[in-house]
Amino acid sequence: MATAEDLKQLLLYHSYDQRLLAVHQSVREIEKKAKNTAIGRGESAKKIASMEGQLQEQNEAWKASERALKSAISRASTLREKVDSSGKMLQWSLLSKQLEDTLSKIKGEEESQLRIIEEMETIGRDIDQERELLAAMDGESLAKQMREQLDTARGNLADIGEKMQGIQSHIPVKFFENYLRLRHSIAHPPFMVGLRDGFICGGCRMRLPTELNPAASIENDELIACDFCHRILYCNGSEE
Ligand SMILES: [Zn+2]
Image (cartoon, rainbow, N blue to C red; front, side, top):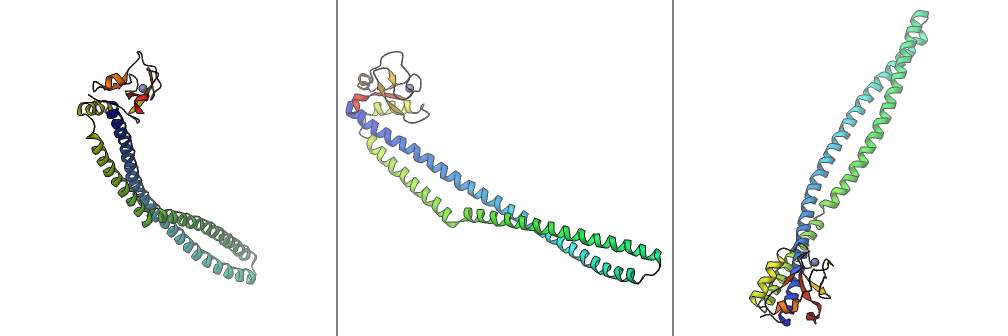
């Protein structure tokens, strides 16, 4: 037969039960974060490698443009000499046309080089940014911090588990088994809530169809659950 004192112990057990769930959740979150960080690190490194490839391509394009520019400049100078010394009208106009084309090629290459420089600067900035991101994720301190968080959380789990065992030993077996049975079907904490005015669930605030007397049921090692949210109900008065 359970008493008000047993209920008090059960409520204490319940508070650790909730904490245990919260710590379990935080362990899962830390593990997830560690996994995501590892994935993010891989993706970031891939991005950097791809951008470095782009930078290399731009570099090649620059070199090709530089070669074309040099040859155009030298051709332009040759053509200019020829134009200057050309007396025949026909040859003069042909050479002038060639010189004009060569000069426009020089202009084109110079413009293309400006674009390449801009592009390289943009890629360079992106690479720097991504490297910073990677450094932040890659930090040994972050990995260490997560390991420590996990260790602490796991230590807490062990401590809480031990405390719960100690409390459980003070609670009548049947009464405790009833708790476990009902607790199993409750999705979110708190698992135990006070009953208000004899018919209002302190968890979901729903009005229960009939007036309940959790205090009387406790004496029969029973626990009453809310019809709506399934939380275990107890009398607020029995807490004091
Ligand atoms: Zn309820």
